[in-house]
Image 1: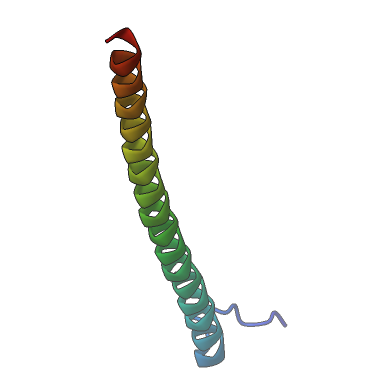
Image 2 (image 1 turned 180 degrees about the vertical axis):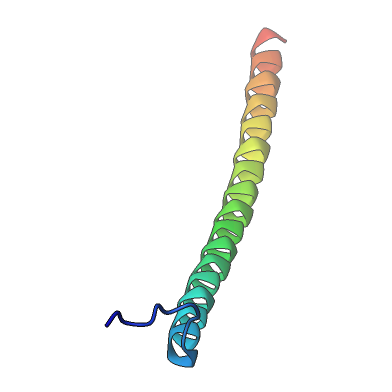
Length: 69
């Protein structure tokens, strides 16, 4: 006698597979949120750095003009 072959997944297997997919999707959602927050922080930091460099260049230029006068 041969055993009958299984053709379909049981309900328990489907529930387990769906719960794994939900966990993976949740982890990807959290990861994308963290990446977005890091990007926003770095963008703000880069903008502040650029403003600082412009300010220092203007101070240097003003000081150079004051010395030459």
